[in-house]
Length: 215
Image 1 (tube, rainbow, N blue to C red):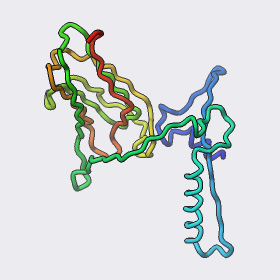
Image 2 (cartoon, rainbow, N blue to C red):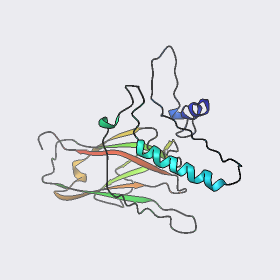
Image 3 (cartoon, rainbow, N blue to C red):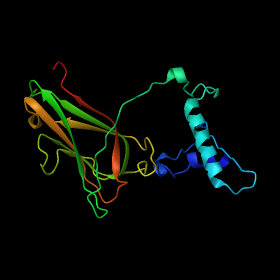
């Protein structure tokens, strides 16, 4: 358990920015785990395949038991307090050959019935993680330079390399000029420009486009 706790509180998974720092009697709590460590053995210690097969069976048992009912902490969500998501996610973001990579652009298509020339539009981009990345945002022109918005170089939390679900949170509130929009079909281009390594990238939390009040 000391080893497990040390890993949770270290910079190993998400970088120094997410290491908890407590001072001046600050109240803080977080639920870790449950942590399960399974140890098995054979009678003569020679058949390692038996150990591996046994461990895989135990893994299936634990998967079927999740989420556990035995934790007594009120901060641990029980089965009836959790939701679920089913479906299939296809990711087509390929390496370009010879261990090289290229920038990736996503598109968001939406319609504007009438562009408000005096009101304020706002695009809010929330990132769950960023690792040595730069997100550029363009409206209706995929090649305009400089882009309408850029985060510049951000992030060193390393969550992608560690298969984490989130790292250091980022929120960008972008003022969208009405001149960038057109009546009818519009497209937002989101480009992650840094591509020297497979571990460079961002994780989206949410993207929200807000129109002026009353539109």
